[in-house]
Image 1 (cartoon, rainbow, N blue to C red):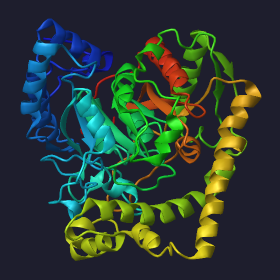
Image 2 (image 1 turned 45 degrees about the vertical axis):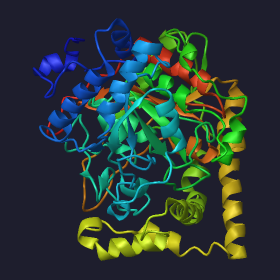
Image 3 (image 1 turned 180 degrees about the horizontal axis):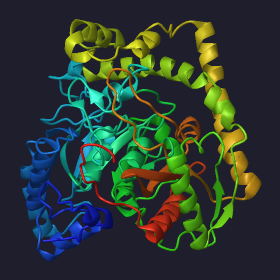
Length: 523
């Protein structure tokens, strides 16, 4: 069995992990090596992760990150073990248990509900393309993960990680703190060693923030690199699907299985010639050496003193590792992006149009439109609306998708989003300083969960890449009062190889990640 020494912080506090500890911090490569040697089977791996989920997520600390387990997981694992014996492994994910955010369709015995009670009881007609590709790669889809209901696009006063179906997901580093949204369960479950890796989705910050706040690595890909087909949407102009791992290597390994042109998602046509079926060759422990990295100081940094301390330490570590630091390298349009109402204009229009299109294909017996979801929530208010309402739903429903003036305003807002984030934003500063990438703090430290008044989010750096449709990687940088702090590497379109090189280089020199200790409250 793979036994790991206690981390420095754990030793100081006399901490003992509350669940079976054979899998703590095990990487995909390590698990694959153990299966190749015959020491471990996919079936045993599934059973061990299930034991941790029951001990930590459903009992003990009760993180509430896992909504359900796949009843077919052990059968799938047995078949994959037999296939390994007969034919050898399909690739690096053969027999590896992964979990999916609950807005990613699976055509099996599991549910796909966006963590809402409204869609319980119906089965999507097809797997999401990313789910199908993981199955083809030999991964075991172990379960579905809690999330901010409807990807946190129901109310301006929501509590990240809360859903009608799963309740409030908690932060495993301090159980009174937010796991961030909307891929809250993806960040928390991977952090707590409940699966080898997971998928999440991002519209603005929903991969980056939960990865940063839960001290795991995650890749928010270029829009179109991974298919959105069969994923409950917010906006086809901003939605992306990406992997969470405890290491950059794990996230990169999963990313290679997800990519490729998909006729079900026209945006993926743009990825032709830009994707790689294996991103592991771009991993480089010396990846910072000689890299030109721009430091963001304004708007998307400087929002919390606790974060600033670790951010400056991270910058020093990059410089010591041989990076050429350009400081500052602020986005000229940063404040304009932050102040602009255009993002909301686009998201409200897209949400109504895209969700209605998804639901029409879903074939649920009763939920066919956004209005049906609104009506369901009103009819089940005690379960769905106990803490906050559905004001964003109502705003989206009020949008007239056929009104020419509305369409013109929407198209103009989308064009301004792209202009501010691309030509006048990320690309402008990359070109001015001849940079390989930009860096900013991922987000503030996790705030206290507040179901009555919602999130107390102090700041983050996800908006530029979200509006641009550009890639970003969040990687752990340190702990502040026991709470994770991460940094984000961001670049231009299709620059995932460069970002993986830089993020893995940073990870190698800092070794910042520490597993969570499930303390009741931050010290």
